[in-house]
Image 1 (spheres, rainbow, N blue to C red):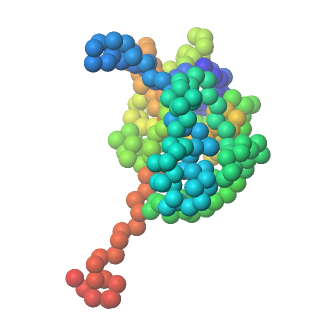
Image 2 (image 1 turned 30 degrees about the vertical axis):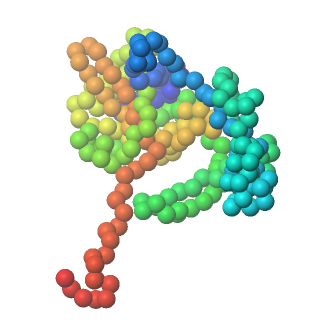
Image 3 (image 1 turned 120 degrees about the horizontal axis):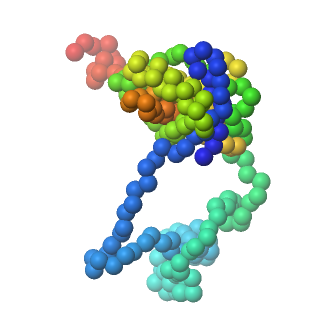
Length: 245
């Protein structure tokens, strides 16, 4: 549960809370004999027995097969197949040594998959619960169309904390439900910045949806970090030499 500072169409704002909109799915995994099972992590191997280490030990890639037949250096009987419990992600250099100073880069791709831009990553700061409320942009997208334009990665539900904020959010949900549309929601003084929920988190475009049934309401914030764009059409066969089909 988190906080969010949001404004309505009349520029009146309030700090309310957000909750995960994902319903838990209760699944019990069974084996072929009906016994309960659970997923576990098993150690497959260590870096000192990986392909790079084996090539270095053998002297060349084509000599690795002979080394495997002779010594079985890729398997450590003491650790191979052991169960892992608590793990942490670390970064290593080409020599397999752990590094501490890492510079991350952000890669932007074109619709055809080619790299458009490569730039150093910036540490994002949360901006949904600051003194500047998320403004009512008024930029609407019809529900029947928006899901064909954006890829939605997550969603959160905005909920009230008392009777006053109930009326506040109910009015927002009703207004959006009557328009049968999702409204783009952004951060910053002009409401044009992406939404960031935690430090270093992924920036998202927000799309606010409202549903109303009697005195009940649902205000859902859909989050997207990818827009669907079709690549340019390929040239027709034979059109490159100026001929007509």
